[in-house]
Length: 141
Image (cartoon, rainbow, N blue to C red; front, side, top):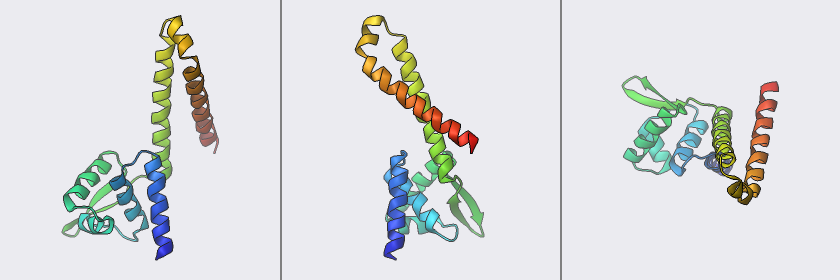
């Protein structure tokens, strides 16, 4: 059981790193470790959050297409709808757009400000290149 708890904690840490909040990472980990779809009550009990808080987080995750809600008999159950690789790819694309927007904003400044932000521009440009390289590797795979 201790090893399963470690897997759960690792999943939660990975998801938090990629922008998930505490409760959403807990929900995703609980569903990933379950061998069947879970009701909101079961999820709430497993992650130790209030039922209403769990429902709100589930609805948010459904909106992001990370979790899927289905009807099973007389109950709603939840399963994972997005592979972790898809979530990470989505976040990488989001970061890339933010960095490109920031780069564009710097380029639109007058020369005095561009010079002040030269270091930031270089760092942003390097990050953009890394993310684009990751994209190319993924496309080749």
